[in-house]
Amino acid sequence: MTFKIVANWKMYPKTPKEALRLVDQIEKALIPIVGYQLVLCPPSLYIPQIYERVRLTSLKLGVQNIHTRIVGKFTGEISASMAKPYCSYAILGHSERREEFKEDNKLVNEKVQTALEYGLSPIVCVGESIEDYRSGKSDLVVEHVKECLKNVNRERIDRVVIAYEPIWAIGTKNPADADYANQIISLIRQGIAALYNRELAYKVPLLYGGSVDSGNIKYYLNQPEINGVLVATASHKASEFIKICQQLKNNKK
Ligand code: PGA
Image (cartoon, rainbow, N blue to C red; front, side, top):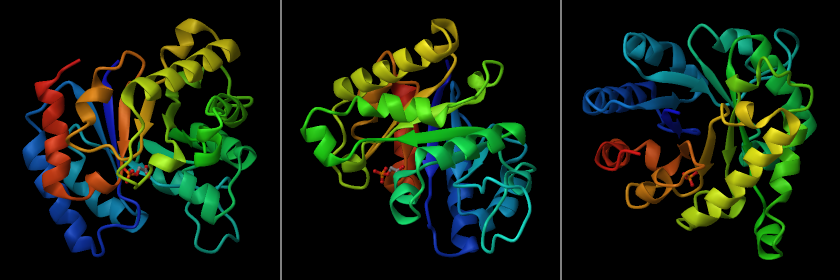
């Protein structure tokens, strides 16, 4: 499976001009590096312009959230059909949305269905709190994955991506140990296999996210169950992000 690097820019950079500059820097440096899939997830307002810059390259775009509905009286929201002309992916259920906007697995599941219906690949984020981690309950993320995938039919499951992002590792410079991340991701794979089958479970890219940077990417790259990374802090600084991608070239799986 092609290793994926998904860049979640969150609410950065602060102007469209800076965003386009970042894209240009990334594009110039990365086009020669083959053998992985790079997905940029900028703030929604920047997406159409960025799309014009990258549409003839191998870079793909993702939106950071969608609403469950396609049109309606939902001030401030963005729908899957609005994102689809530009984006291939939609990040769903990020821990910041779960925390700030009280999104739960049921809502994430509805968004997953909407994304799939409108041709976007959902990148479903799950991750345990520090308390659950400390009390050895990290495997509850498997149940979260199952809830997020409820009623997703087997013809569509290979379009879903799962990102395991322990909450305690996000933006903390305290990444999960790569062996540990591989172990939890392997449990997630088994959970998906139980819902569908083993063959289909191996068609679902499983990513790790949480304080990934150019110094530690190589450890995740070499784990058998990890099919990619979701990077935020290190993804909207051109030099750091380019270094991460160059590591892929040097440490090819
Ligand atoms: P980080 O965040 O790379 O800054 O730890 C990851 C994320 O929020 O997806």
